[in-house]
Length: 339
Ligand code: FAD
Ligand code: NAP
Image (cartoon, rainbow, N blue to C red; front, side, top):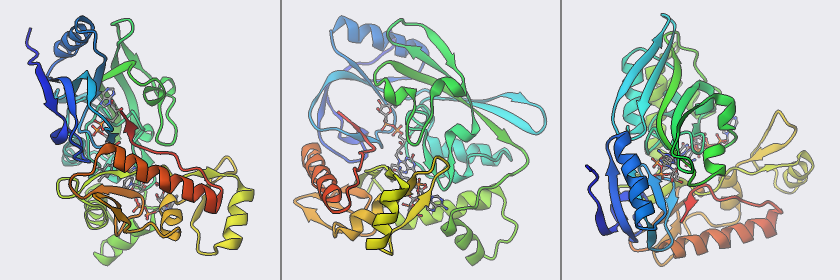
């Protein structure tokens, strides 16, 4: 028995919103055995098990009557290498950005556009993290997870993860799987994704004409540091709403009424609208009520100025959803996981 259980533990340091709620029990997993032990322990105490990583995609609205298990497993290894394509496996508790930097130091490209995303490797598949035109599904080579229903450990292929836009089978079946380790197929030859305007612009400002994967990572990290609030300074969970996918007809109608509106046509005929644009156009940018607010530079990010509760943040989110629905007939879906 190596698991150290804490009773009635504050989760404030373990969620990037900095919301102060308590867990009935709290523990950290440093091995697969710890995960098995936590599962048994939660059953013995008749408590659900809530697995978390960095807590950067959570909105905790009340005390959590669960055993909260923070994944703190470590380890990165190369599992295949044919000289060009290299498969790297990382344990769930590895810090995502540190892992991205490690791959770049090995001369491997594929994860550079996902630089500086907070959180852990194990949570990355849960919402198929994405940024600047790349999602982890694009470099995914498999993962190993524990099925909490049967206690069995199994591997998942790309198809079995059912990845979608900020979505996966792990998000669709909350509480069923504990992701233990994830594999990524990376490349020694850089095939860069520079479609997003700000990335090309930043590289060009820096006079870089033939960027390496590391140049792209640095450019993206600098853009993100300027645009996004640092959760250690101002509590937030990144984008609070997903970008909505709407019919081409609705997008055309809205564009007529709002010529400045941003929309990106998708392969399936729908149009992806920029949720941040809608929220800003509705006048919410910089809004603040008590300690819950909308970031002054980035309307898609809700912030906790200090002592906002999860319920206050949720109430603000619901007001924004209702307003956007009334003004634009568009439903905004929340991105963080609500507990
Ligand atoms: P947590 O918040 O701890 O958990 C998220 C969910 O995953 C929970 O439901 C939890 O139960 C589950 N989970 C966690 N670990 C495991 C596991 N090992 N097995 C099974 N389930 C697990 N997201 C993007 O996609 N793109 C971005 O560009 C991006 N930018 C961000 C910027 C900021 C400033 C912030 C604060 C957040 C941003 N996010 C972004 C959201 C967030 O960083 C990601 O979703 C990240 O993957 C969450 O990792 P985490 O370890 O913090 O997960
Ligand atoms: P931005 O550059 O201001 O663009 C606004 C939105 O337009 C983005 O959300 C992006 O959608 C979309 N977009 C921009 N250029 C596009 C292109 N060439 N093709 C298709 N879609 C395009 O966005 P931002 O807020 O600064 O974020 C930059 C990137 O980081 C985005 O990919 C965003 O998803 C990611 N990010 C995510 C979070 C999070 O918590 N989920 C937080 C911060 C940043 P997509 O979001 O679909 O890419």
